[in-house]
Length: 181
Image (cartoon, rainbow, N blue to C red; front, side, top):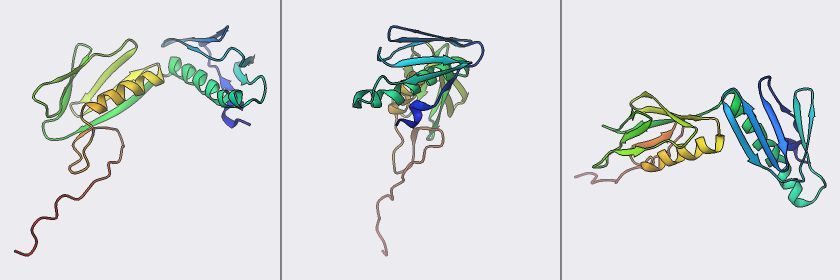
């Protein structure tokens, strides 16, 4: 049995969930999201909760059970609280700035790297070395944060680069050098 799939989804007040022919649409105070799900998955409402059930115990439906529940739950959380992914920049002279909605990164290249936010995503620059990606779609927030990190991933010798907040980088020792001369 899917332990995650069996958990009910709590629907807060102010959030409207519509299920129509394999499409789940969630509307809340921060925006609106929709997701295609398998049309045979069974949804049932009950006093502010939503439950997901599978039609039978075939392997495919067992796999989709927890996934469907998690996707719908992520949409409910997104339209109520939103998602935020924090990033840190480390390195001498490395910094970030906002020009309008565009994120401008100075990370050791001969040019500035400009990143335009896709629809539904905002960049927040707390300090020149700390920034965040915010939005209501968890998947899109993570994807944009990974794209920013891939501009200059942290290197293992000095640790310079863009990393997720709290990410531990495995450091390597440098050259042994000349010893005893």
